[in-house]
Amino acid sequence: MSKVKTKVVPFPVPVCIASSIVKGKANFATYGCFGLLAPRPTTYVYIGSVDPHYTNIGIKENGYFGVNIPSVDQMKETDYVGLISGSNTDKSTVFKTFCGKVDKAPLIEDCPVNMLCKLTKTVDLPGRDIFIGEVIETYVNEECITNGKLDFYKINPLLFTSANASYWELGDKVGLAYKEGKYLKQ
Ligand SMILES: Cc1cc2nc3c(=O)[nH]c(=O)nc-3n(C[C@H](O)[C@H](O)[C@H](O)COP(=O)(O)O)c2cc1C
Image (tube, rainbow, N blue to C red; front, top):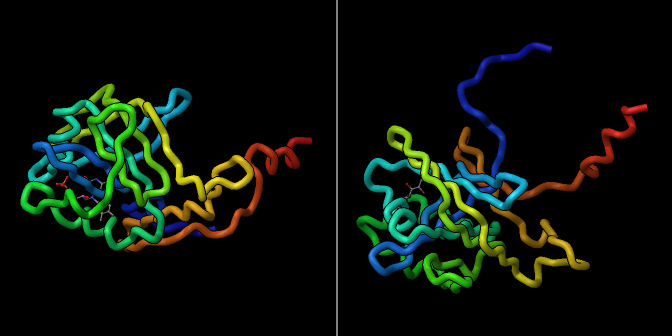
């Protein structure tokens, strides 16, 4: 097999919309560099800290942030809040929000999955902040649950590839984790 070297990591990731309160108003911004850490439910969001990243101000001021997972239906709004900064445009009315048990980060009604996160650590890197938060609450739209389980087809998360600046949706399930490998074990 021949391989070529590449500088970018081209695999698709779900995007999130981080939500925070800045100067008394909701602000939203899109992030591809985010993820979950186990076992204690923890999230991280990797955010540029050089002007004009407005989200960082709200997360630092309130100690809480929302991680909202948009579906393909929210593609245009998701792209929009990732194109402009709250520092020069009021994005507070782009989404309808609700509040979890702590009123320090708005959560987006239209997004099928919402996590309310308490900031536990900020890693201050040159030109970047990594915000690490404990997930205090997770909400899922009722219609995205089938037989008591999360239904990822119904959530239909918006996927992103930075290599060609494109959005995608989930394809078909191809197997069962922790089971498929067993056939190679004998
Ligand atoms: C699809 C997409 C993914 C993005 N991912 C990131 C990211 O991982 N980290 C980052 O710092 N900015 C990322 N951005 C850019 C921010 O969303 C953008 O700078 C935004 O305007 C910041 O808004 P704010 O200044 O109101 O916080 C992304 C934008 C888009 C559209």
